Length: 350
Image 1 (cartoon, rainbow, N blue to C red):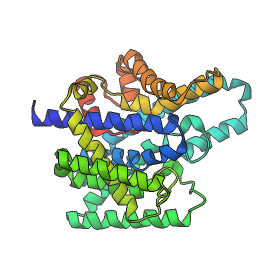
Image 2: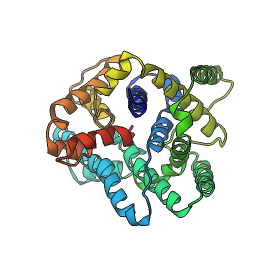
Image 3: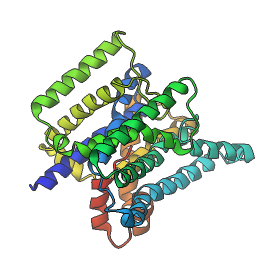
Image 4: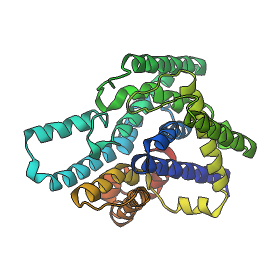
């Protein structure tokens, strides 16, 4: 297997594991345990996206670069937004009025920081786009990589200043664009540490896993109380907000590289573009079943339903037609094969 193919397999495995963690984080059980998933699952997505980042060649190519990124991120965002809203209004037609619609607009505008369940994951995609654009602009403005690192460090400090100022009231910045200030740090680490991340040794993997378990145990025993939640701008420890997510990310990526050499790794690559439908639809699907149809089932069933049902919909509908591939996967009609490879390679979602 070619080196690029090997690298693609472990990235797909890592992306799939991170998606599973997203679903478990929303559907999977007590907050006392879910908090540990939040320590690293969103940073992992930004790390992987930065790892695969291809900056524009110069200011002259920025427009075409923005067009491509908009198609990959914002077109599916709008398509899933319309789909989820149609389903929501289908079940809520008895309650439709001006205040109901205005509340929905608020839920979408503020990307999940308000209690609108159906749109709870939508914040990530606008934040991802903002992070990509921010990092691209930093690279264009700062030709020297050292200056890029300084700019990223300034963004990290500004993110923490905002978090400290808004400790009890998350700021209602549209589409969670302010989260890009800390996300760009994880993004930059993925970009600048490509060689290190691509070949994580078994020894480093085991060490990262051991440290991750130790950190969780220390927190669980009450010896520390660490919280990280990007959506709600909860990051208040300059050192740990970098150290803990990266240790646990290295553990997950190392495990992914081990799994990529097994049959599981090959099976994951056959699943295709599962990221977008699973991340966008796992919460709405379970919400419809639990709230509208009053089906009561446990956390394990919720995770399985939230993961498997969107994949089935993707295979039956989203991946089947050129229009749906464009709307729900961001692929240009007539160029499906190359766009599918690009989608799996370049866009990291959660």
